[in-house]
Amino acid sequence: GVAEYSGMNPKPVWLTEAACASSSAALATAASQVRAGEHDVVAVLGVQKMLELSTPELLALMGRVGDVQWESIYGTTFPGYYAMYARRHMYEYGTTEEHMAAVAVKNHKYGACNPKAMFQKEITVEKALGSMMIASPLRLYDCCGNADGAACIIIGNEEKVKAMADIPVWIDGMGNATAPFTVLRREVLTSIPSAVEASRQAYKQAGVGPSDIHVADVHDCFTVAEILAYEDLGFCEKGGGGKFIEDGQSYIGGSTPVNIDGGLKSKGHPVGATGASMAVEAVKQLRGEADEGRQVDGATVALTHNVGGIGQYCFVNIYRRD
Image (cartoon, rainbow, N blue to C red; front, side, top):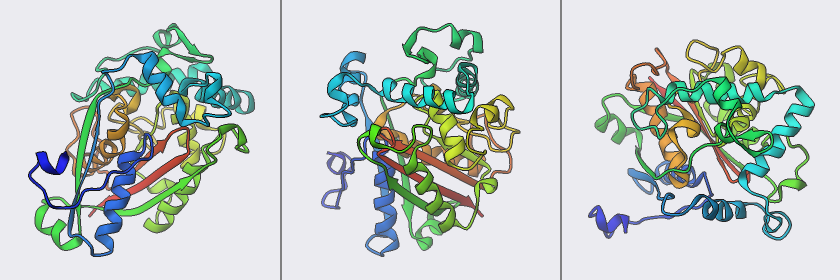
């Protein structure tokens, strides 16, 4: 349908699937095609309509991303999976509900500056902690909102990019990895192993490290997921994610500003469009085109981290502006 509606027939179209990371998988596919010389310019489009279904219907469908035979058949949902991660992280590292609430507060602060965000309002720690329990210890304000959305990014070879873009942004590093499909077969529940491996690949390919990242967009489907991402991406030491947000290190002015578009928490999570929207945000930040109140001044290196499912897939990309 996309090729027909946009007048692109008979040009080829690929459909990619990696749960919440589907459009990041599309971006990886497109980049591979360009690097191989198969195509000069590729449009990567992520689209999702979710709000035609009720929340219970969505939870039932999305819960199937886990092992249907051994996990989701017993009623495990997305909040339930991440609640296990949260509880284990609290047990091992002393992370608190206040730390998770602080992530929500930050992301709503920047989401309030984003005219495309689903929830354009600031909240307080007290409001977050007073919201209804969803899957202990995760409360309503620890969970992202299901959303409709679409995002598109154009990638091309060096010649085409220089000819088409006033301010070129380059993809310097790309990594992607998988983890055991059955969550309870994983060795740890305080880390997303696919994210650790994908970031290792991306850093190596780009020739940079965590301290070189000026701004990051990470997959905060739940507030604890952002805390895990701080650690998995190397922005802080293992177990230090709670202190990282407590000390304001993921705010503008901190060591690594994270989710300055509001993240999934405030911007919303249109599953198939999320990865592409992260790429769009990275480009805007590097071009200095982000909205007032959420532009990271002087940013030249950005990172995106898009998780599919409960870490069954992860894509990490590093972008650079000359």
